[in-house]
Amino acid sequence: MLALVAVALANADGRTGILLSRLLAARDDRRATFGLAVGAFVINAVIAATAGSIANRMIGQGVVLLLVALAMLSAAAALAWHG
Image (tube, rainbow, N blue to C red; front, top):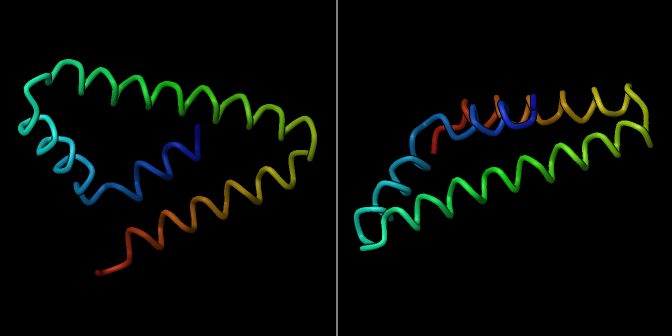
């Protein structure tokens, strides 16, 4: 869950929302496009949760916390990046 929050923070500049808005405006089947986007997010979240629980059992808490810290640092770097 923390990794998903880190990714959301990294995309907080609004580019993803603008891209989705333009995609929905350009296509006639807006409901299908939005449904695909939401479905892809849910599938991604389920896969991430499953992989996280497997990794947690295999490699231990310390390594998982290190990976989460690296994800949060990369999200912070993406927020601070001007480009």
